[in-house]
Image (cartoon, rainbow, N blue to C red; front, top):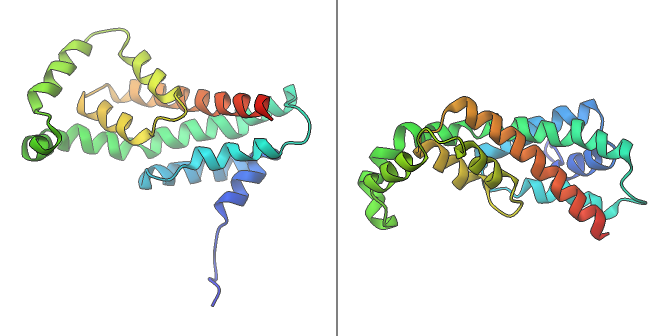
Length: 179
């Protein structure tokens, strides 16, 4: 029996990259917002894979469309969607580490020491930005680390959005130039 309502996420992402429009931008935002709730789906791989099937080269018009209608919605979706992980680590990190840290070989004093090193430093946002730009680094550990280290939530949101937007564009350029 077929489901009454189904969404082909791969097709939506495929169409969104090869023919970006406002509706696809809304879908991308929703998919990445909800995708962060699952946090284990390789949505960026699925999103950028259609660039392999691009006929011709990346034009300025297509790059601009991809930036505004694909990369920016991904950045905003991941930022907002990952807030639950950030918040969970921010408020629940200390009790969890105190209880289970021995299995991970980490203590709350280790977290505090790392936090003191980053406290009031100008480069903590740049570190988050760099980690978000790296294409092969999953988003989950970065979100948890930012929460554990009690990064300012507004800085977290801004640097996550910028970093994820840059990650999408980097992947599009790399894949686009390989093909």
